[in-house]
Length: 204
Length: 330
Image 1 (cartoon, rainbow over the protein chains, first blue to last red):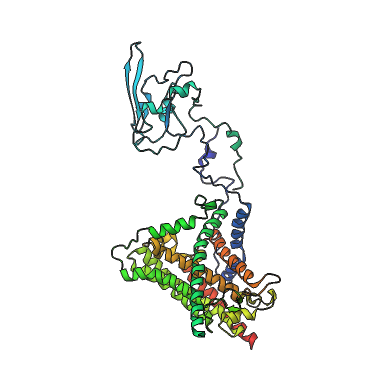
Image 2 (image 1 turned 60 degrees about the horizontal axis):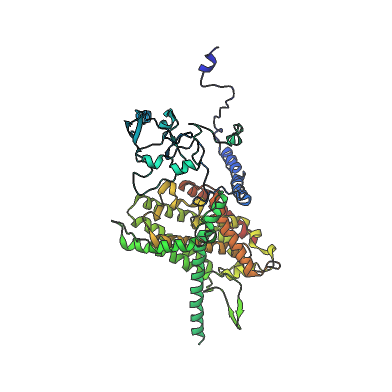
C-alpha cells in the first residue's frame, strides 16, 4: 500500500477552494454590489424562517421538573454498588483497582479478612466533591460491582451524601423485590440506539 | 364651569393613557418573551400561572422589591434622575397621540387624545428625542466603561436616525399641510386606497427604519447590546430604576406603532366593515409583532454601519423623496 497519497495533507480532490468574491474596483461596480446585496431579500428569508418555525410550532422544550429526559446507559452519574444475583452478596471483592485507577483520588476503601478467610470490604466511600465522573472505576472493575447509575439530581445538604457504601449499595429489600438492574457494561448503547442512526448529512 | 370639566377630563384621560400604556408595555414584555420563544422552538415562561401569564406579576414584584443599588463613584443625582427622564419623556410623548376615533358616552363626546395641539407630530418627535437623554445621562453618570460606551452610542444613534425620521416625515407633512395627527388621520378617510403608504412608500420605509432606531429595537439595539457592551447604559442599574428604562422603551414602541399606523396606514378610519377602533388595535398589534419578529430574525448592525446607512443611504433617499414630493405638489 502506497502512503504517498495520504501524505499530501493540503489538497484533496473533493475540496472547493473559495478565494472570496472579487473586490469591486470602480464606483460603478461598488454600486452594483451594493444594490445586488440590498435587493437580494436575504433579510426576508430570515423573517420567513422564524415565522415558519412559529407556525409549525414544533416545540423542543422539556419542562424539567414535570418531564425528564431518559438517560442513556452510557450516562455517568452517581455510582452504585451492585449485588450478586444468585446469592445477594456484595459483588465487590475488595481488589482495590478502582481506588488505584481513580485519577482524582476520591475512592477510599478498607478491607479485612473475615472468619471464612475471604476479603471483606468494611468501608467504601467516594468523595463526590472531588469525583470528576470519568468512569474509570466502572471500566476497570472486574466484577461489574461499581457502576454508574443514572440519577443526576444530586443536590444535598451534606458533602458526604450519596458517597458512603450504604448509600451506593443496592438495599436488600430492593434487591429482593428484583429491582436491581444489571449494568449493561461500560459504553453500552441504549436499546433504541438504532433508531437514532442517521446518514451523515453530506449536503452540509 | 367648562374650564373645570376640561381639566377633569384631561386629568382622567392622562391617567387612563398612562395606566393603559404602562400596562400594555408590561404585557408586551410577556408577549415578547413568548413570541421569541415560539420562533426559537421554545415555550417561554410556563410555570407562573396558566401559560406563564402571571409571570408579569412575578416580574413586577421582583423589580419592586429588589435592592436599589447605587454603586460607588456614580454621580448620584444624575444616576437617579436618568431612568425617570427615559420613561417620563416616553409618556409625555403619548399626550399628543390620538388612539381611537371620538365616541359618545352618556351624551358626552370624548376625543381619545389628551391634547390636540396643532404641532402634535413635532411635539411627539421632540419628546421622544428628549428620551435619549435617559441613556446618555445614565451612561455618563454610571462610572462604568460599558455604560459610557452605551451612552456614546446613544448619541451616535440619535444624531444618525433623527435626521432620517425628520426628513422622511417631511414629505407626508407637505402633502397634508398640517402637523396635527388628527388632520393626518382625516386626510386618509375613505378606505385602504387612500392610505398614505401608497403615495409615500419610500417615506414609509424610511420612517419605519428610523422608528426601529428610535426605540432601540433589534437591528439597531447597539446601545444595550449584551455581546459587546454587557448591558450598555443599564449595566449599573437594578430593580425598578432598571425597570423604568424598559417601561420607557416599550411605551416608545407603542407610540411608534401608533404613529406609523396613523400617518401611513390609514389611522383609525373604518376599513370595510371593521370599525376604526378595532382597525387601529389590529394595526398597532401587527406593528408590535413586527418589532418582536424582527428581533427574532435579524442580527444587529455595528455603530459605524448604522451611521453609514443613515447618513449615506437613508438621508439622501429622504431628501430625494422630499424633492420629488415638492415637484409633484407644485
